[in-house]
Image (tube, rainbow over all chains, first blue to last red; front, side):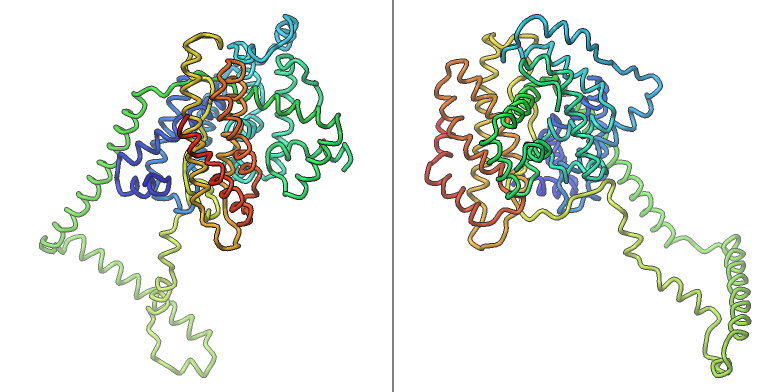
Length: 189
Length: 306
């Protein structure tokens, strides 16, 4: 039996293999999430490591009925935010150059095969970085990790109306930036 | 429903966060209204783009090694602390009493206790009504003792969880995390049309079908004999994730002329849509209906045979 509840119970008893399975199961979504928040590959790796170390220390505090995934995302969010705060002065946010986006869009129609281009990945990454912290957090949890509003509220501590507003605004901002790559996308919501 | 209402609700509808009845109204409006349907298509096109977002991240093997080392060090530290604590406790049992500081400390505590008791007794007697003032069976130390008795050990022991946690979930049949980047793995800069990508695409499809198979098995194993509502929160969110992947993989299979893959992904999609559209607390008949279809169509066998 390798359900999350079993793995947590075994890991609490000191079963290192069970904790390794938890790591294998959740490390990819966690590193993606952290990377979306901090925008730095190496830092994301370090913070993912820190997330799992903290999770290991706090496993016994995890209520049996609680959802492991939500709990881990909550820890990852705290770890990422602490890191962002500590490097706030040094951080140089990469703002998306709207002119550049328009130039790219003028190269011609954007068929589906171009969507996988590295360029588009770069645009999404920069567009995410240009969102403010709360919007980026909510957008990432909903769009990339398909968490429900209720789960996002638990992870972030935001009220549901706030997170819905942030999500809506984040969608508008993201649409403005990736719109040219989607061909027929309208620029208004 | 008017267009304005529909457009206000469209994101909630897309996110699957809408009560069933309202969702039906939005669906009906989207069928009838071309403008709103176009707007909805824009949202779904964006979702597809986000589903293809590749961060090109890998989990370095050294990460687990470092975590294992740190967690082992944590455990050793705890063990050492508890062992040394135990040793001191045992040592204390066999140590001859020394009356230096211990005696003076005990005397100090006793004096303070007596002083506090006297002060308390005086105040207590002054405030007591005449009937009670006559009784002598109240120990001056009793208020102190009472204070300690009132303390609830559970209140101290139960610390708050580190982060907010969820309400109890009734059923969580299969617990798998949301897997990211379903289509694009580490391609090392290869373009979509490269042969290496095709291999990785096949692997992604196989992995996707395996996860879908687990999901369907999980649905099939849900006990739905009673007419009680069933908590399908996990299955629903898993299904939503797989549905996004499925759309992308099916289109890729179609574009790449991989018709067996396209066919099996096409057969799977309606099940994912149905599960994704269940309410969190799904009525047992709805779940039963999906279970029956899973069994009847032998979709699991089809996925397995791919």
